[in-house]
Length: 319
Image (tube, rainbow, N blue to C red; front, side, top):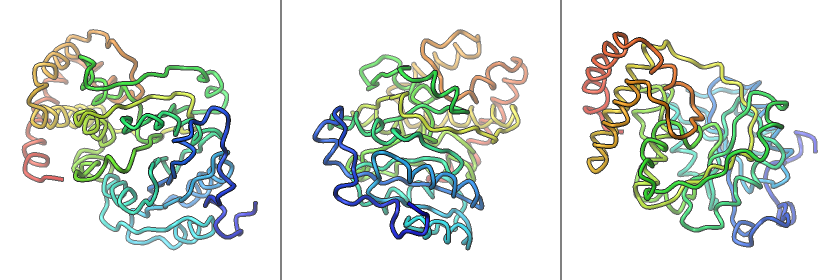
């Protein structure tokens, strides 16, 4: 289909791929894809082009423009038949919350504007939602198509709060990253899924998706990692290591405050990381690994800076 065809990204009743491995409850579920963007029209076009090639066509695509209003972004969204929403207050969590509240589907999938899904991405990402207790599913992220081919058949696992290490796995990168995730909308009612103190454009410039994963598991729902649901994404965004360390410590303090029943586990995790003990699980996100590979003096300085930053920016202002 050409980009100018009206509604090219919206599914018609017969458009949805119903492959032999799709359970009936997944086939019946509707799916919205949310793309949050800010002045990246070229990347957005590439992302929407890739979404148009998905085997499982989404029922709805929402583009959230996290700027004062970008004409190119709006034009591209309309060209591909996506809904265009404006969130003028800077902050990725704000944009994600707006997309979630506006979505009309059972499942809300998120992909970054500079990522491109493989053709079977949405089909695979939806399968675990056949279990009504699954609240969040994450997929695999690869910097290239060649590397993604080697990830096929990679790790699949489910996590819930019965796992003794559930909090550290969910909170510190063991479940995947926000570039590639899907949420069950019915389980998002009554709480703000993405804390607006976290995420790019906010005081703490990351960790909003991990904090959301903790929210799902602490409410008794399960999360599943499905590495075969792959998006191609080469991240160009990085912070100074000391700034990452400050933010990581502030984030740890936020978790410590919000999860009183897990404080011993959080303290043990912090001690293990300061002692550079290996994790018992695989991390998708590398940022915290960079932080804890720094020198101990640097970590102590970052810890103090994180405490002051937390008191100033996180404890005082609720998201």
